[in-house]
Length: 210
Image (cartoon, rainbow, N blue to C red):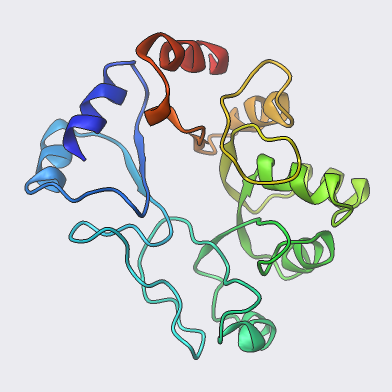
């Protein structure tokens, strides 16, 4: 985990998102604190194992990450999701806009989340999937772009059919909007699979953002 972090930080980026699936490294957390690296944790990230459980069967969020995926529609807690959201149980969480198969995976549910004032992490690649699959209307997307409850912005590319975390290009859906909204101080997470790219390709991704 630490060696991968060092490689990414050498590109001059402003911080790291730590995600589930990263192999734990002893002393990594202390190293980040010593270097004063800005870090945001995501979903089931754990300092001690590959991934942590996020949702209990009764709908409790059992991690303390900066941003969280809502549960899958087939998760045991999904049937409790609406009622617990309405009770305000998740207003302290930053919930990511997802794609069909997840809660907050369609435009109706995203609009509902905005009506309730939930804090959102908008992943524009997920929005693109929703739009391409007819799960979100252009009206909801326009409303989401102006929503004041945005706490994170995630960006990568895909073909509109699956969340494959491809490198960004100048034509990546939502990229210009993400750059604009980042001016409000909202953290931006570049979520293409950098570990699959060469150093030159990684550098190009950072330059594409800048």
